[in-house]
Amino acid sequence: MISAIAQRKSDGYINATAMCKAAGKKWNNYYQNDSTKEYLEALAVDLGLDVIVKNPVTTIPATALVQVFQGGNATQGTWVHYEIAVDLGKSRTRR
Image (cartoon, one colour):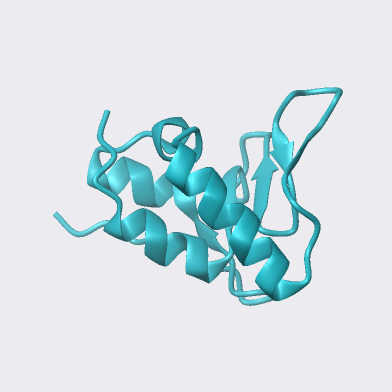
């Protein structure tokens, strides 16, 4: 079965939640991995963006690279910069 993975036209960000679901992965397993954290920090520096910080209200990480939307509509989920989507796709992180 082929699953459609949404990409936003406005900025090219890709729905990482849908990617993980289609591949039987969990976003948190990928995101909490030390090598992923190093990669995200290096990518942020390369792109001139803020490094990853915790949102004090929800503890959901918020950056220009990783965006989390809650609310039950089509935009719900974790959306990531396309370079992170490529890295996630190559990741061997499983459930």
